[in-house]
Length: 335
Image 1 (cartoon, rainbow, N blue to C red):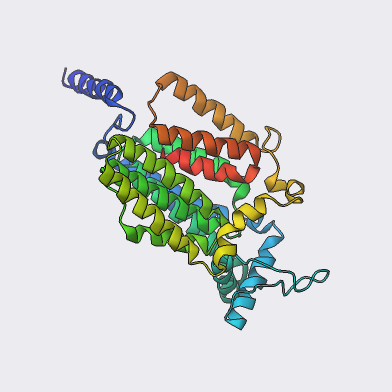
Image 2 (cartoon, helix red, strand yellow):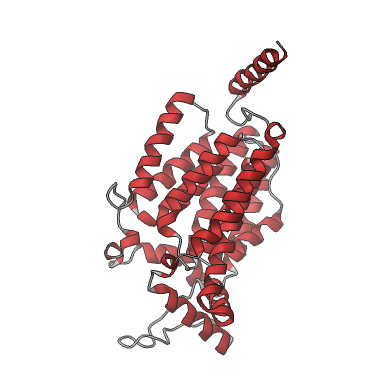
């Protein structure tokens, strides 16, 4: 009888949690103590070094380019403005927008060779999934965590390489998780948070997504505040601080506009990662998309307007360019 009553109690809590909205956990974190430790040990501590120890993380030819660029920056103590390596087009203007990550890669390689680069990949993945664990554990049960982590690894696997974007992933996750947290508290983020964008803009061009996330979160926050003037001004000031922090990159206005410049390149469609997505190129992404879509139709969760816009926009970008699948799956896991 005691077990039956306990089971009925858990079922009752589950039903009530389902009624109260998508952010309530079906099983509260304190109720599954051992499982969260197991999930953390496997997905945050064990899987990253296992993946990074495979030679496939060095399969991209840009790995050596990034190391060479980092060495040049260290030797000259400056960020290049022209291409010092090209044989056919020497001296061509160059916006070294990934200079910070390239310096880290060069140092890692000079210290420990490929093992050093593998360590950078490992730390990047650990940081990413550690942030996901920290944010999701507050409102997700063990099954939801397991699905989120496994799904993220499946989608990210083709993109796990010793390149600068591996350092941008945890920055994207941290930036988004903190903005979601302050939104849920009914507060505008502190201006110091804009420093994340300063770091991001000096390691990878994907910092442009930081503005997209901030805009979507601000929309939800202002809707919650019924577009109160004080809330609007707070988010506006934070947006300006974010823009100024991003402007403080090593390439100035050229670095700020570089992601837009890249998107207009005529040769972009010839690059594999910039081609449209298809079930043939990334079948796991489409499989997971179908599974999650089915789960959403079954559970019918409620999304905030900004969240929904963010998901739809990044999903459209993931369909348009294969490389944006990684951004979509990180944001989808958080939302």
